[in-house]
Image 1 (cartoon, rainbow, N blue to C red):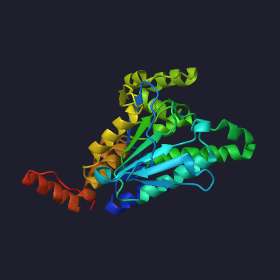
Image 2: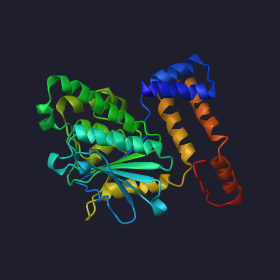
Image 3: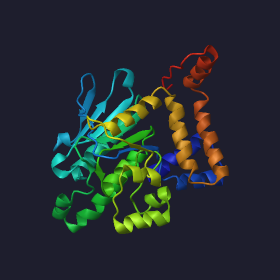
Image 4: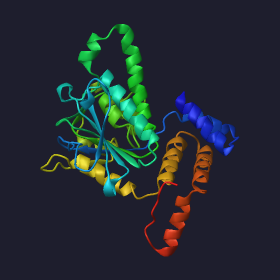
Length: 309
């Protein structure tokens, strides 16, 4: 509902009257921009408490389950979200869902954020899916609402207006892979999302057989964008994700947000409606200082300095 309301407000702000555009709003329930990095072997994301960065903790129960670092210096604008439940193989618990919701809301409100990296702080595992030990203790009436909330989290992660990059550092199972792949271009391993990424037939094969694929196979299927060889320090996927964030960082943040919106809503509708979405998104860039800065930089043959204004 929140996505639908936001979409309607978006079109109202441009006074879009077309029935096709109203239809586009209903179809655009998923607002995603994703790029994936998957290692052929186990990848350990570096501990997120390095010098000179801001680390934010969430939750009153297990504050270490999630660590969020806002990078600074030349990497200012990049946020690294690290899952850290070593005893539970990063399984999705009530507490982790709560913490991630809070982290996503914090990122969403921060206009200085330009990209987000999602990774694991636990060697050999990205996320084992649902926390089955916790699930076993739930009353039957609790299970449905919790699953709905976890799914809502995945949607909210995908709905972040900035590019998101998942560094998949080891096994990612069930809801764990779906959460990871809610970053950038593709979402997969769900019965609705996976077929849209790799096709119905192959999706059925993977789901029915519960098949586990490595990084090279995943890239061949189009499930991920990059498959990298592991390095001696065990952080190849994270470093590739950071490299991608650094490529995104100097680009105009308003233009990036609008491009993400245009792509992800436009792909769900017919070409005519998609072009209308593109036009509406571009109209938001026209009055910005960043657009004028880009034109000036081109004329003066220098690198633009975008401020998101």
